[in-house]
Length: 195
Image 1 (cartoon, rainbow, N blue to C red):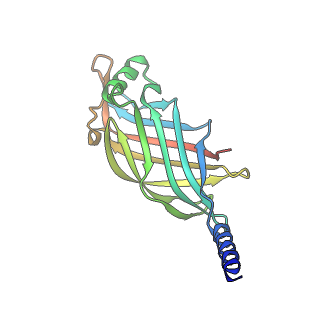
Image 2: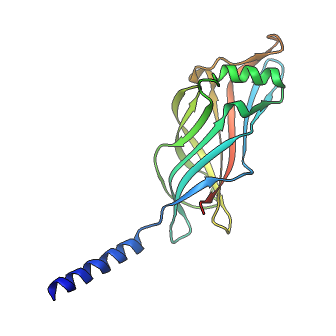
Image 3: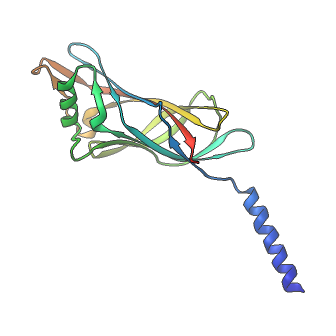
């Protein structure tokens, strides 16, 4: 009889613990994202857009409507980057970013973040940014907005120096256009729960 009572008590405890534990839901990047790169040159400013982006994350929701971000990564296909300066600049960008041997630029969250409120003014995220095979830790302010369907949109931007990643700033138009070292990467990416 004691064995049955012990078994029942253990089963009830397991059920209660499981109910109390937050559910870690896996999220995937939706279509409709925007990722842009803004830079300067000796002639004028320039912009590039990234056409192919993938991403995933792990989110668990709190009872107060905030959420914990357990993981998030965004991968950008270097060969999908297109410049306002045309194909010559595109090819110079691919060469500068060593696209053949390092075909992706990646953002990866390095540590979980707890109690993020939706429609916030920005939360601090520690991220590993990998460009041209070089990874550096950066701090980025990111905002999060939510939809009724449970999806979350993250938005942020960061200014970096290309030379910090071993990238020689590209040139175009037979060397008459020389880009500056500083570029700003901006992203707006919506994540939806995996079904």
